[in-house]
Length: 102
Image (cartoon, rainbow, N blue to C red; front, side):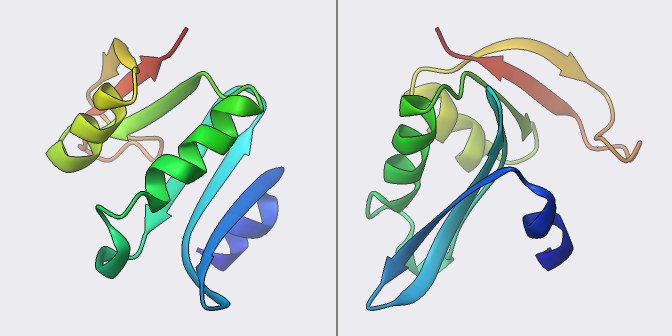
């Protein structure tokens, strides 16, 4: 994960009492990764990170179809499914939904 974080062009980190509790990485219009510590989910951390990314031009992201919590989160935030792939970026059998937001 650390190696991937070093490669992402834009990285936002959410903190609680100076400790990281979530992060979002983006490249141009694409959100490449969003993670929030399970103990801090449902408290607005992911929404704040995504809002900052959208303010900076993020309009696309991919989400694992088998993660209904994440799919629901992005749909609630105004993203719509624009496509689907049977495999993830590594070619593994994890269906991916491609989403966009106007």
